Length: 358
Image (tube, rainbow, N blue to C red; front, side):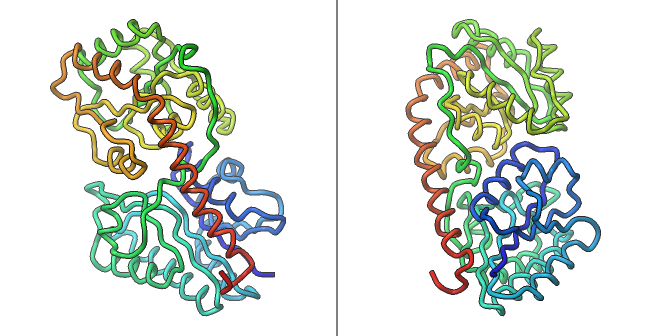
């Protein structure tokens, strides 16, 4: 039997990272086990990303080398799928990229297929692309059968591949409550950034009052828990509690999104998963990074990112209220993006077990 090798390491506990890896794994999930490389992931991560009994799991020190060795020794024509999400091409990533290039070359020598699901190149100051690492990654992309980028600047940086929506748009679309029945505004901010101004808090309170909504702070990433508590204190409300049962916490988040008018956040996957439930996504923070705007532009949703640095409370209120007219537009765009990701999935699935036959 031809075997499927999938890289599923990630940032844990991070619901968004888990969702995009689970969606990617679902593309090739069949009755046959997969060979899953999970780096240093804890046990909870395996359940989150969809690992099942019988799957061959590679974790711990030197696990990537054991994964590549098993790929080399496998029979048939393997399907190799790299992990989705953000990829750092800095100096520290050089060895990792060399190992992944080796895996690509081995798969191609065995007349298999290599896929890079929709990804983006990290732009953080501490993870800027380094020439040799980028060269190795570009070589791996040349070897691959399909390379997808979830926003244009990453395609420009590497120069190989095609554009596709973020994998997260391929998760299940939920009906959620009807617009008139939605009574919450979800708010989730990165804990590593400064709190917004007093005007920001006042403007959001006013918008919620005008909409007859309750503000619910929450965290979709464990490291944002303290920020959620700070937001709750400032708004004088209760946050959605964090649960160490991560699948239960994910479902609690999705129920929140099902009843939300809007989700206000500076985290990409918070906004995407919220939009899958019909909540209008709004990035409204001081000096927002370009990441959210670039990724939503790829699915034809523009003008959702707003710099609140110099906004008055009235400006914040107007921004939140104006976004409420975009519900139908967002739903249509999200549905189209979901279809695009599913077409990528169908292409990858058609290669499973077929080797060189398209």
